[in-house]
Every structure is written in structure tokens, then in C-alpha cells.
Length: 456
Figure 1 (cartoon, rainbow, N blue to C red):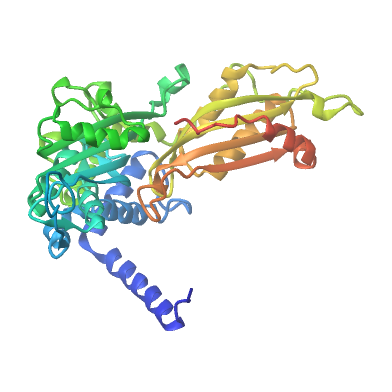
Figure 2 (figure 1 turned 90 degrees about the vertical axis):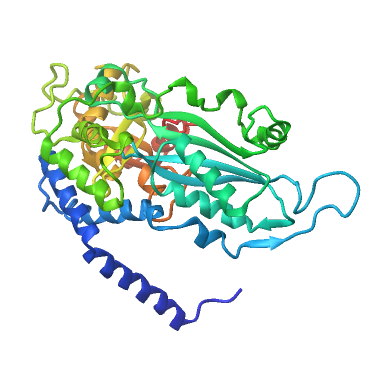
């Protein structure tokens, strides 16, 4: 394997820098940055604070790159990507460029939900039946799907648009599209305290077919599903257009109600800058829904009341000379939701807290520890900071020997930058004897659930 020559490397860097400079001064970027500043001020944040000073630009960049599909055309991708391929020379049957089923599976995509503007994950499976003795380059199926995913979408419309575009673009005998979609289900501040069992994700399957796939009961669909069955997809879970089923969790909360007009106007300006029409039926209530969700993270200076505890330290340490490792207790899988202050995108998962108790009893109970997690989660945050804050606070009533592990899925990892699906971030903080005793740390870490999926 060879390495890039130095000149090529610097050319790549120069191109990236010039893109950054040009991008930053484009009118659409400037409008989105101004809108984000209005949203941050609506939360009571100081827009000049070091952690969020560059947030408006980061958000503008993520949104514009994540909706770049509005400026892309299917014909530009499909044109020139059709290749001649013969069918069977004789006899009966289907294969090659005439009637042979082709499926590309497990395409990882993301899209922004048109109802709430939060990203959702997509596992896309595309199939088509060639005709006219020609086939399309397989990578083009992924690129066409990505064009429509990089727009404000719902699962069913995304499936329909990909299907229609491929049918018109390559003119096959038929096209089938199956999407497995996951949308984060983010509770509001009040409901999180009342019910910590909220599911982290809403999952749905959307399907669309054209040509020979237009009839959902056609034999060709049986072949398609058979080739996907080991991927865990079931026909019974398909999204039904006639069911009236609500996809986005924000829609299940009813009408959004009155929202801050300056903030909703800011969201409207973002929609226009992305190339959307805020008056489109599906987008009319989107600004209010987004602001209602966003206000969960408003900056509050209210002093936290810990069920009557006034942060007086409770001494739960074992007597001098006792075996510290024998008294390790834990509260595992505490639900956790938060908002990244760098990109204004949610992250969620679980928190594990370890502490020492000579009698093996939590002196305050699990609900109080869970409340601490929610209190620090429902703010603009970074995972490293929230881990430290939880550790410092629970040490005031669980004792000075504390270990905290936070495991979280960050939507900024899928909807910008490297677009890395399935990654999970773990952070931990140690106080007291956990910071100096590797055996105690190892004992606690080994007690964590093996299959913890951070709330999925």
C-alpha cells in the first residue's frame, strides 16, 4: 500500500479550508447562525460563553450538510451509470440484465425529521428488477437514497421518493425500497422525573414499491423478503399508509401550543435557508414543536432540592481497616437524556453509579440518584462535564467514595462529520478511594451489564 504524497495531502487540506471559509460567509449560513443565537438566548444562555461561542456556526454547518439533498439531482448521478448486461441466452428464467432481482442491503443513512427537526437513523434496503438488458452501478442506489435522505423527511415519503426516483431514472421492471427507521424518543423535563422508564427509540419500517413491486402481495416481494429475513425484517412491521399511525414522538403530544414567537420565527428562517417552504403542510407546526422540545434545556438558576437534603454529607465510609471492596454498592442503568451544546443535537443513554456502603444500603434511594441524573442531563451539556457533575453531587449524600460511568449514543455522530453509526461513548469519574484503588474500580466495572446498549 502506498501513502499519499505530501503535495496531495496539503492540497486536500487547502481544499477543505477554502470550503470552510467560503461556507462561513454564504448568506444561508449567516441566517442560520443568527437564528441559532436567538434560540440560545431564548434558553437564557450567554452566547459568548466559551462552550457555545462557535455553536451557531457548527449548527449551521451540520444542518446545511445534512440537508444538501435539496441541491442534488438524481439524473446527475444515474446518467452514465447504466451498463449493458445480457439476460439468459435461451430457455426460461430470469437473470442478469433481464428480470434478475438485485438487492443492496444495509445502507446506513440519516435524515432530519420534518416534524421536529431531530435526526433519525435509517437502515435502507433497495432492490430492483433490471430490464432492457442493462443494470445500474450498485453504488448509485446508495447515492440516490442519500439524496432524498438529506432532506427534511418522514419515513414513508422518503421510501416513496427513493422508489419513484429510481423507477424514473433507470426504468427497470420494478423497484422495492424498505427502510428501518429509528427516531429518538426524548421525554420532556417533567415526564422524565415522573417516569424514568421511557423508551429511548421509536422504531418503524416503511416500504414502497413500483412496477412489479406495486402489488404488495406479488411473488417478487416474497423473494425480496426472503433475502432479507435474516436481517430481522418482518412484513408485519411494515408501515401502513392507511393506519394514520404517528411516526414522530412529538406528534403524539398533541398540538404544541403557544411558543416564543421570536424563537419560532428563528426556526422558520432556518427552514427557508435550507431550501424548504415553511408553509408546506407537514412543516407548519414544526417550529412550535421544535421550540417546545428545545425549551426543556432552558438555563435555570433554581437551587436543586434533593428531597429535603441540604447537601449535608452523609458518612458512609467503612471503618478504618475494613475491606473497602466488600462494601461496593451500585445503582445501574439510570436513564439519561441530554443536549450537546456544541451542535444542539440530543444524546441519550444510561448512567451507572458506584459507591461504598458498610451495610450495603443506599441511604437515600434510587429515585433521588435518578433525579440528580435528570437535573444535570436536561441542560446544554457535554458528556465529560455531566459525568463529573453527577459524581460530585451524589458524593454529598452517598459518601466521598464514588465512581460514575455514563454511556451514551450521540446523534451528532450520525448526522454530521464521520456519520458513524452504532458508536457509543463512555465516560467515567472517580472520587475518593475509587481514584486510588484499581481493584475497586475493576470490581465495579465488571459488574456493569454485558449487553448494555445505552437505552436502545
